[in-house]
Length: 112
Image (tube, rainbow, N blue to C red; front, top):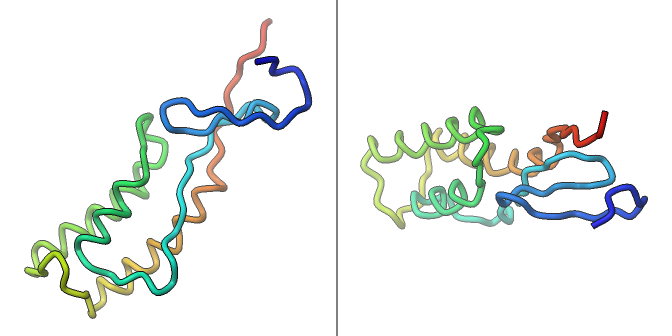
């Protein structure tokens, strides 16, 4: 791959996207649809989709894992729909997944 071309080539490494023209790493994540039911199973499933091998978005992931732990402590079943304040925080977290597209980690691959 020639990274000096002006082509917008996106490669994947460690499940992170490397955008060669900008020389940045990006964390891919997609929010669920608005009608996504908030259950303990769906929350865990969506949290697991954010792969964070370099720890770049750890504060964001920890927030979700804390919510999941709260669901366990409240005794929710795997398929029981959540209807309390944790559901509102979960919905907000799901919506913020699209914000991960704005996380750009610069890489320096220049010869000096």
